[in-house]
Length: 68
Image (tube, rainbow, N blue to C red; front, side, top):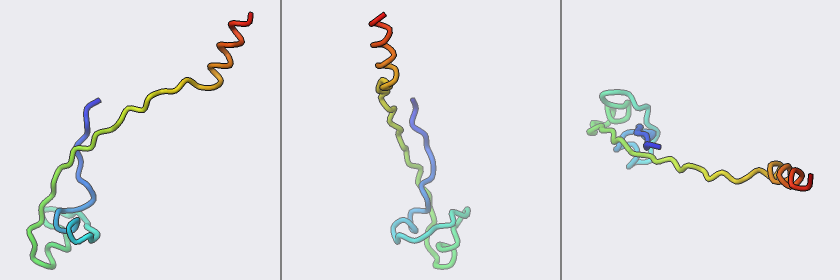
């Protein structure tokens, strides 16, 4: 599975200040109000593939079939 790329909840400056970002383009409202350089980073978020565990019902069904 390929990792997806997406923006992560705000521009660099809002993240640094831990402020809510409205993510408007080219400059968010906060960076526009207080003249900051508004930039967005793409972060690569990788998703783990969950290992499947055999269901309990499947094991019970398998045991019942073996008893026949």
